[in-house]
Image (cartoon, rainbow, N blue to C red):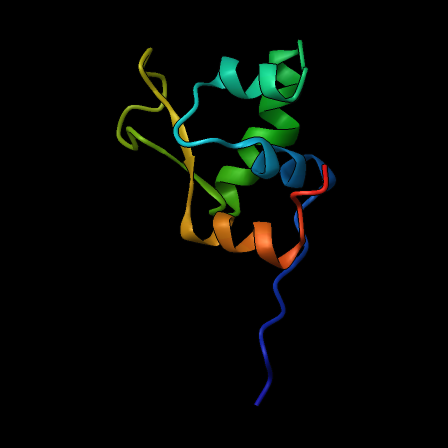
Amino acid sequence: AVKEIQARPSKQVLRLLAKMKGEMTVLEMMAALKLGGRRNFLERYLTPALNAGLIERTEPDSAHSPTQRYRLTRSGKASLTTFDLRKD
């Protein structure tokens, strides 16, 4: 049987996962990462983490809601252990 190997997320996504605390807004995540460029954050951190299923929206049907927040998924929490991220 072939065992499925979990691809290692990018360095940026791993940094984001390590900084996640409960439910966070985009601005809170950017501040935790000390990032100022929203476009860079969306392209390199948030979108890849969402696409990989490592974080999720609290309002999945309303992506652009002003009250939108994000949280780790079960896979995202598992990645914290798998990739030993708490050293950052």
